[in-house]
Length: 378
Length: 247
Image 1 (tube, rainbow over the protein chains, first blue to last red):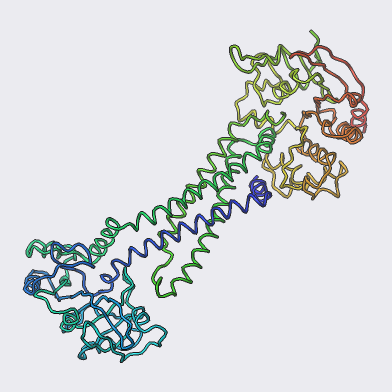
Image 2 (spheres, rainbow over the protein chains, first blue to last red):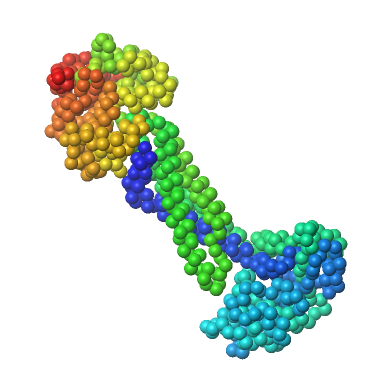
């Protein structure tokens, strides 16, 4: 009887297409919004993830997330280095000077000052130039998006100069640094120069990044550092999630996306559910005839579930295809780079669509189960 | 009280009662119906609207439970069968022709006629082939692949007839098979019904208002107010029986 169920489904072309597209657009909206939301949230911790060498981040106990820091004292670096189990620990500066070009274009930027000796945190994926050239005086590495913001319409080229708070700096490399939460250019420089770009203060060390000795986990080292220095120490992953949680709790972003996602879910459920329900109700006579002929309730339930799962699967596939095309196009844009269709979002959407399909089926099945086969004579 | 009693009938209703609702809303639809239908002929069930004809055939077909009395189909008290056995019994032994045909609009004529076989688990190709062969007998060989909305009323009723016959049931229940058809087409459908459905091993019950087709009946049971009030004999179907029985 499976082919009967499928032919009943596809026989009413308008309703069938309505069902498929309701689910497809619901899928597209859900996958699109959840992936963009997750991508934006992920961006809040991208600068942490980019420092691949460091497993442990140490900061002032008052520092909650990456963007806003309370400076550490210079002596804190030695205190951290003195904690047993620390293989190495180096300083990291994060500042936000204004960058100007010779053409007058300007933008606030994120400057990361890396330890002069080790250059821990330097971008490893370079599009142009070499990261080792950061050792040259007054040199900086800028990310591609930042370069295109400051030098719009111009080809990528090293050797250009930038003015960072009245300090002249030369671009020695263009990196493919991960996008940050805000669209500021990301500039890497040596620590000793980055603090000058920002302007001297008494304490300027934003973070200490460290790695544990073998035989110790990052978490164990964090616990030791916190216990022995009183500073806040987090593993890379913990700190990344601290940033994500901060934005979740302190911005309206989750509410905005949450509303869209909820509406997509409700509209998808209502439209698909109602259309499928009406489809079943309009076929009640036929279902009654099948019951009279001797088709069991179990078989009818199977037929309805097959119909619902078929439109669900086709609609989900179409919607996922649309979302994949969307992200394929937008991920190549500078502003939306790094935003991709996450498999977790697709899986979550699949679960939601499955829920929609089951709700629609249950409503329809109920009508068929209570249908008296004798009704077919009326 | 008049009865259609016959020895070893295919259908034997004994004091069948059926009511709907309770208390003040209780409606007695069947009031001790005595009814039987014999193998090898067409038994017509006639009477005014609301007299209980449809309820009676629903009870006979096992689609409704009687409130009292017994219904025996081929010696089996169907009320005593568990639900799943009753469905299996119905699937195997009963064929239906409905007033509004109730064909599945998305299936072709052959596929519609094959539905009882599909419900019984017969493979699709075999089921459709058997249904197609039956449609040829019913004069629909050129319309076997047409969808119901491309068929005339008479053609749709012939497809419904094929659906009722394809699994070779022992009882065929027809509910107003000519009501939606003009006289000429109704007559043609009844001729086909008499020719194809009437068989020495099969009983046919026809509920109808259409007195223009009464001449096809072997027995006519008149119903009124939930009871059989008169039983008449006819000869219309006998010719078909004799034709089948003669080698």
